[in-house]
Image (tube, rainbow, N blue to C red; front, side):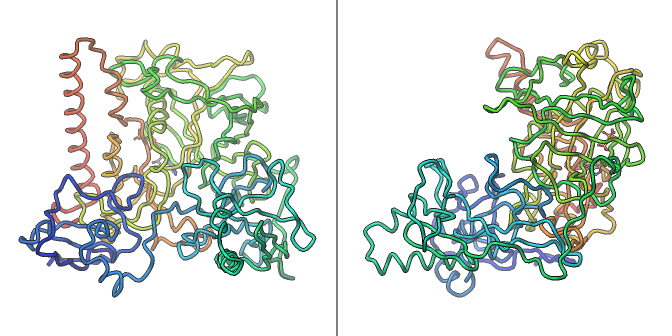
Length: 599
Ligand SMILES: Nc1ncnc2c1ncn2[C@@H]1O[C@H](COP(=O)(O)OP(=O)(O)OP(=O)(O)O)[C@@H](O)[C@H]1O
């Protein structure tokens, strides 16, 4: 029996095997329900168990999840009847408390819609659930919630399963008959209509009634064509106060007071193309003559290895503008412009190469936020005026490009991340990334001195960096709290922090400076409004990817044309990375006080 210390998350039982059951081979574990990171996943702690690999060797056990057991069938029905009475849910993304807002009828509105509050798994796993939006206004300290609910969208891609059943009644040609003389708000999608087809009249109404009931929305009327919501409005009570708005002309746009920090993704359609940086204190080291005029920056995206844009270079640092590219644009060619206000006293932290500022960001309209000025705050990272500091910030931007989306999202339920034995929440590994921006001149061309002169500093190292007069690039990301103090950790938290590094390594990425100062903690859960969060439900992130290495990039940089030499070189790169991961794992154990066994 393992000593459980002060753990609340552990595997509590062993499933008995059918004596004639198969051998459960290590390299053939069933896919079952998994998070996009590919790891074993279950919705609840008690949906993990030990299972003997061989029915004949009961002590040789491995950890499995409920959905894995279902794939082999053994014992499953008995456990489902007596023990696991909740349905077998798939993993879903938990959304942070919304601060962004966008008109509901905007063509770039997302699904779930911007402003939709995460109502927890009891509600959100229902297929016909309705999203409740955050409104402008407060009752006491609590934001008002809209009574208006928005149904999930039926996917436009036919290969995706339809889980909603409704689509908005606004497509061209939607001239549906009315419901009690009023137009439908939403029409049943074709998938739902197909389900109604061929049913008797009574069965049709049963299905419609059940579906409307599952929406858990008030005052809905429905027929076989669609639904209409009768009472529209918000939960404004007599005590409700409208959200404070101040005039942008008179407001102090550099002040972070009363601004919410951004924790949601900025939807692709609103990621800024142009960032107008208000920097009167010349924090970026711009030399523009008019201190009150903003400096123009443009967002760039590092090319991924497949596109062949990554230059082979032993420093793994881009050396030319050909390494990055402008973001691909949709059919609308209008540039999306955002404003960033930098003030030195808003510093969040400083390292050996950069300073990070809490900076108010005005989003490209009509995207805005629930705040007095419509601004949010983000963490803006700027390089020191040293050649290697610039190289590190560029490398960090390129590393952010390599992270899959799931590394920045929170999923419900738990993973088991080998070699850790214990279950861990599936929080994001890294902060959300809001883009990498380079300064441009009046002629619209990049003022990218690093691209022009970086090569001259190829042999410089961190201890002997040259001072350079270059304007700093700006990396925007989510602000994620304070450095952790592992001495104060519960065992669950120790394992959780360690698992973040293991999940990073599973992406074949090393962080390169794995110290306590580079893991941040903040109160959670982030799905709750900030006033209701607690450090008892912490949210962790790994930061600082200046020295990170991405295996996919390193492999693309292998230049050998001779097949044999190429193979040898690739093998060398892989083995070198494997050693780096072992080293980093050891370093993380020391930093997080992780024991050799039982973690
Ligand atoms: N996303 C963030 N949220 C909140 N604070 C942050 C964030 N990123 C960085 N910081 C703060 O800024 C400090 C410096 O950041 P970082 O460690 O990335 O800088 P660096 O100069 O690249 O580091 P190094 O000293 O390792 O070279 C951090 O220690 C932390 O206090």
